[in-house]
Length: 291
Image (tube, rainbow, N blue to C red):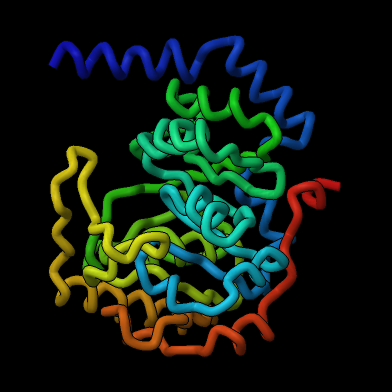
């Protein structure tokens, strides 16, 4: 209990209220290297974008490197493996798990990454998340990557079911973002799309099946301790995805899966990858924001 109390004290006084950190934030704002998520709405409203998780189904897509010219968002270690396998960096990285930062930095000893064309979305210091912008682990990442453009968002990351989710779920421009249960589509991808006013989402790599990872189909999902991960209950996943799709219809958001077979999420309509690319919006460059 005392350790937890000290940790909260450190977060508030040493991390979030540190005068030097507050000055750094002000300077980043002035240099247009730090934005609020709401400031991206004019650039993404009405766009059609791609979002990939790390599931093996991404490997079924042909010529993924074409997405270098389009808006592709990813999660977890996605930027590292997209660069290693396809040779480009995604346009957006949704950062919400604090241990991802040291994992990426450790991998950069072999594979240096350039985030200059990537929006790095990170929880604000007052977000109800398991990490935050001034988290000491994320500060190390920031120091390593001053070229990145950072974007602050606020969320309630509590993974509730349809019966408890806020009526503001997927509403444009309304924070905090709300996280429905299910998987990355319902608790990460769609909340960002809804907030930004995105019209169409094409997703892949959210399989909820033992498909491995798109860079290694034989690599199973594991916990940070190396234990095999168990997939969530399929009935609960389908309940959440069906509810999310119904909210998408109310909000005029189209949500398509790019994988035809290797995914549990067949409630979402399927679209061919080539057809999706033909419809997709051009990539939004960080340097174009705030001009």
